[in-house]
Length: 157
Image 1 (cartoon, one colour):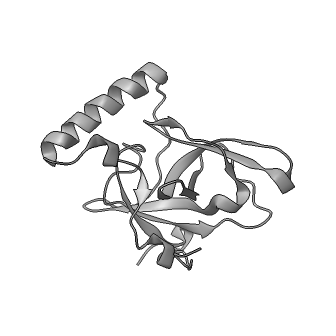
Image 2: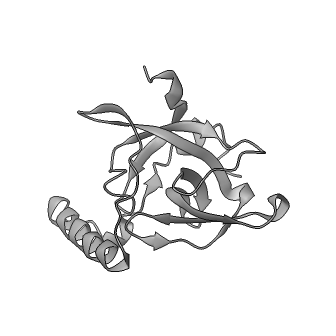
């Protein structure tokens, strides 16, 4: 049973763009983004991305509330294209990791662009050896396909 502050189950992660904060197999817990909620930089948000649901960190928020743009990015992968507020579904507040249990989501490593690039290459190459036949392009910090049901969403939306 998750601690009360964890919120509800949002889904299971896979991919490495948020490594080491989020690792493949972590369960994310949180709450739906409230209409007047304004998450701060560093918050991990669940959003509809171009290839499905993603869990990435908020880099910055811009614009008036009616036309807010959310700039998200993976800890390793860098910035994503900006998203409208309507694409942001939830705020993740805790994770459950096998062998560890429940924990707050760690902050991003203080790496510059070169450090992120080098760590990204290292992690992706290590995963390639660990999981033969898996393409590094498949390693996204996305939520598992059953996440829309956990968020109470119609997958056809």
